[in-house]
Length: 112
Image (cartoon, rainbow, N blue to C red; front, side):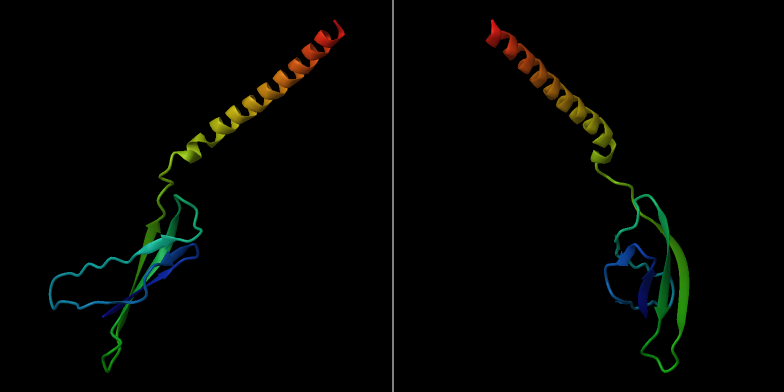
């Protein structure tokens, strides 16, 4: 049995077709590695799994639909962007105010 994953735009299958040996009874689990390739974090995308028997005289295939959810961003930086931007603007404003204050006080000492 050969298993392929057909992904939506923004999701990429990390492997080609996966060859599997299916038991006569029971179930079979297979890992299909997927990667985010531009999809927005935290969104859900469709996925088609195609199982086929390419080596038999009569080829059989089955298709299953599934949804995959792209994990949210694991880092802390996205939540800190706005506070860090605010802090940066405050520091620049403080530096400009200090330079202006220093320039006005330097002019007073030169004339005295």
